[in-house]
Image (cartoon, rainbow, N blue to C red):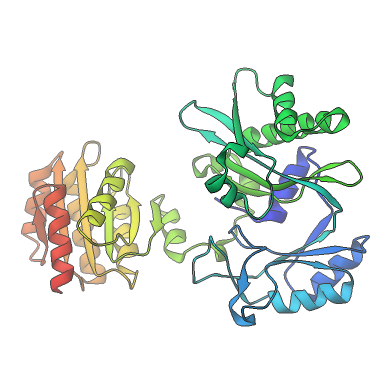
Length: 398
């Protein structure tokens, strides 16, 4: 689950991390009122969408010469002008794709006098099972280019969960960023605050870009991009309350109601699979045979008939889907449960596109018998390779 920048900064502030004063705004009038509460004379008007690259983004409705989604303002009147241009318009960034995202919220923040910009992020390192920090002196809007062109300017280290943050971690951060004296002490403090926030709130990614040093000699978190481990949200109702469903795909929202792991993609073959590894393999083999998957959908090991029916309905609701591949390897999941769910869903929503079903494992024969006796036009497959070839051929023929 992702949250907006202003929400992320509020979370960091709970743990003492230094952030600038600011206020969210849903309307132009609220943006003006927010600016009046800040000392000025410099304000920053920030589009709030769940995507990076806002500063370099462009608004579809304003033409190529318009300013981006993060703008400086030197007066309250200029804040008002920016808010009028940004709210309700579509911001396209490198991370949104061509469709962009509509800006429904702004964050009006007190301006900072920046002397240096750094990059700092925390994430879960799957190889070490530890929280890892990624740090660079090259903070700002071009961090992706830094990672691609000069990766040696990015350094990482991980934290042993048995000890948590230790003084040597702070010294490592100061060394990487070339900080000394009081700034080195501040860096160590900020690192500890971020680590505590990350672990306490079950985050899976926290990115601060940029982390700045002001001309007054203060370190500040000038941005905050945070995502949380969805499996831990039951422990954090205060984080769940921050969810902005207008930033999410409708199908993904529906899937979350049934605890389905669903991610919308850009292809034409809808996929329903049990197990993340098998789901990834299914996506790969579809691409191998020349088509693109329309989604990642893992119904899980213990899916009920109701969940399978819901999953099928979500897939068929996508107008891009030209064919459906059901690929089930029954271990905990039983093939007959999948079969009954598919039949129930087809009867409920109809079947307008080719459907290939590959079943293997527990109760496989019962599942195949249920489908074959249903009278539905379902193509049976013997294995994953066979299933992928058949669904690709079917949509090309359709």
